[in-house]
Length: 168
Image (cartoon, rainbow, N blue to C red; front, side, top):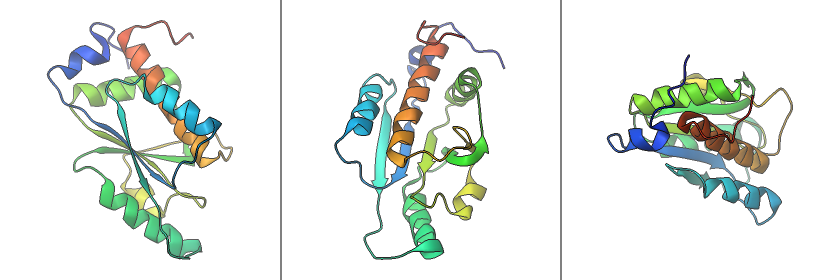
């Protein structure tokens, strides 16, 4: 997949209103992970809207995962391309990830990224996802995954705009 460098991300958005949304289980607390997430969030154009969901009742196991899936599903924008983050997901190079986001941008598709709770995403959301993306087989802290995603979205936007942030 070739990446178009003319005009980059911003030019395409003059004619297309594309939204990027991150729906994540849990509330972020102050700390280095949140600071890192915010530093990339400030650089994104279009911005990445963060929607946090949290189940307050004392549920556990599959019952908790099912409830978290309901909370996430209620926040998914209609018609959005769903990218679920999961350790079992497909790893993409930064260039391939950028190409995918560029393809969605050029098609005018909103994108919703999904991050589950401590036990991951319920199978119902994995089945519903258009892409299951993995940042490797390791298990990462959920708040760090937010920062990693924001950095990769920023990197993708930089690649699409022809900015030298990314180096092969």
